[in-house]
Image (cartoon, rainbow, N blue to C red; front, top):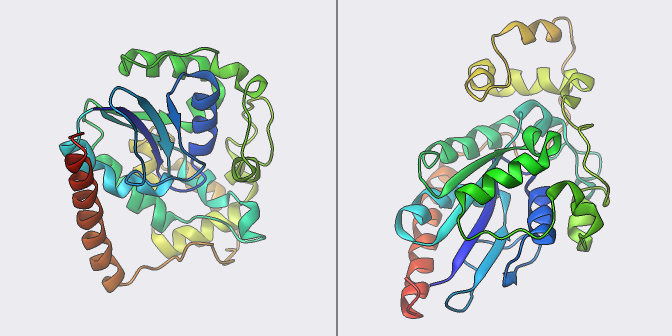
Length: 262
């Protein structure tokens, strides 16, 4: 058997790249895969430790955790309002994600959050107190060995071109990206019009105490600019997604069984 940590998220733009770069620079792993590697496209020798990340793999993780030992999942959670106003250089002027995708991914995460090998890391905690998050991960993943503090990751990281583009360059950790949704209220209004009120989710996830935050949206005209990911998902795509999840996890289990690693 080998031990694998796979980082997933509530959506793209949830902080998975930052956490991956922190862990790869500040923790010891025998094998590191590239910037975006799906959980089932990996291989390692018995006894090795492996780190991978792909934010949209959240949908597969409940089945993987239920059937594959020595597999750990770190789920990156971020305020959905900040997620939907975030942009990525590869999408140009488009917003990157949307509330439809955030709801979907978080729904899958809720199915595994009580599993002992699933650890939730809030993006806001990661940038406010990275060393506390590092300490928590070490306590919950007994074999994880760290060599540098997360707060000093920028002194040791060697970013790939993809990571540098996603993170807008290598720099020390800061909290500038928390609460940026307040500078993009028209986008928030548009997303709520399309996908419904998110106050209950914000309260559940600890981002709001009540619904009073909605007062900030009064009188704001919506910005209906498109997202990189579609705001609507047809029935056929939903059915196909379910089949894809079952097929990929089954194939992954079979390949590991065939190698004697299950």
